[in-house]
Amino acid sequence: MDPRAMDPKVLIAIVAVVALLVIVAVVLYNRRNSSARLKEKFGPEYDRVVRQQGDPKLAENVLVEREKRVSALKLRELPTADRDRYLRQWTFVQKQFVDDPRGAVNEADRLVTDVMNSRGYPMSEFDRRAEDISVHYPETVGNYRNAHEIVLRHAKGQSTTEDLRRAMVHFRSLFDELLGVTAATHKEVA
Image (cartoon, rainbow, N blue to C red; front, side, top):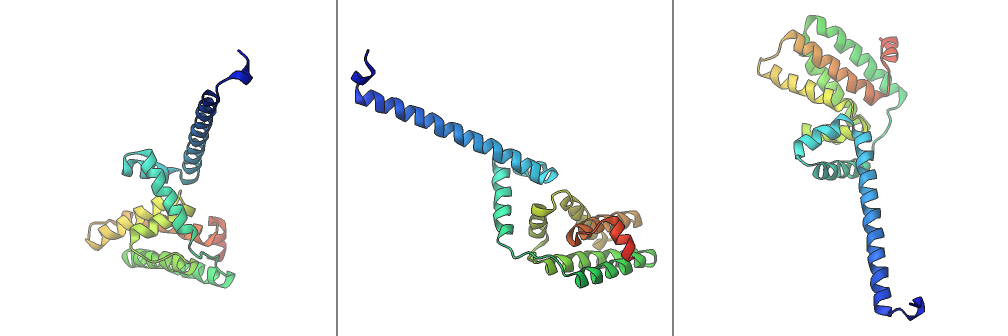
């Protein structure tokens, strides 16, 4: 049969089916790439949100919404003088732990919150702060959540000195991330 003699309606139907298949293939490819990008970017936070949501697609929607929300924030790096001042404050809080572990943990929590505020993160309830932090610090946000849980138990009188020590370590990991310092830099200032 001569292709020029093909019924135009059949030709239009074939083109429409091929176009639909191409669109479906592109959508599936983009979805797969988006999933891989989110898994790579969020790491353990991706897995946590999938467990929380019960469905990878729902979890990915949550993470994309977080990214959009945080991208609208006016986050900023700290000036060197502010960074150095915060490092000195952390050194003081860390030394305070020996004599007053409970007070030191409360101060560490306050100091991390101050740094977040100075960087431009909104100071809403804890869960929203953790979600916002997860966009840039997905590896460290778990430490922040763990430290916060210890602080809550501490307020009820249900934490040990070892728990408080772990909270300090957890707070410090986020503190260092927020300031962009390494442990070596941190010790040099101390």
